[in-house]
Length: 258
Image 1 (cartoon, one colour):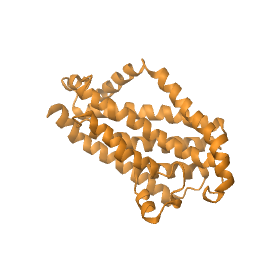
Image 2 (spheres, helix red, strand yellow):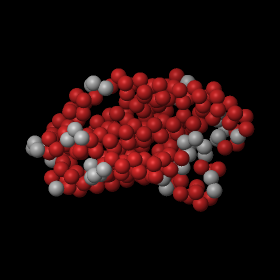
Image 3 (tube, one colour):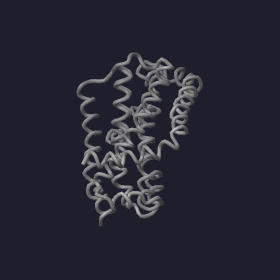
Image 4 (tube, helix red, strand yellow):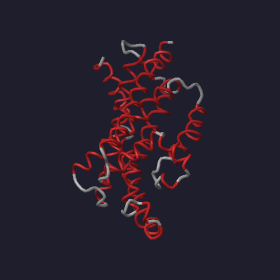
């Protein structure tokens, strides 16, 4: 099974060799511009007027790990939603692969491996930029941040691909971005502490997946992580990965062999 899944991964890598330069530039430029803007611009105002909600650290230190988790989610969704839909309805490379001895689930695993690879590359670039801004204190902190960000991205890529393969119209992807992912982004605590939200909205934010990724990366970065909360974050995100893989067994089979 693994060998055949790697053939799908190899196909994705062959395609990626034509476009990797542009993605690397974006992976480095985005965190660099965000950290410059928030560190030297808006962060100065926030540090002056709202220091009590920043855990005693400058705003850019509070913000950077949250942005890392959000960027991992964004990369995972970009790599899983449109490309999976196009693999069925546009380029139709999924249908070509399904005509070979590869099973639909092997196709999914190979493509998911490539999505994780892309999340690793973009997260690594973000962590290196954070290190350049002296927002990472040690190689062990950098490794923890990288693993937390990769798990966050995988928790979105696995179920998103399982859903996107069954989508019939591209408008469904747009509706998902506007009415599900954007609210998740705004309630994740990336830009501000969710302790500032009304109690009912704060309770809602606590059950959103991106908040778990943001809080995992932030507590690891600030050194405030506890075994209990870290276990909850890891369990929540791993459960999403498992649910996505289980769902993909069904949706990929129906879409490619149905």
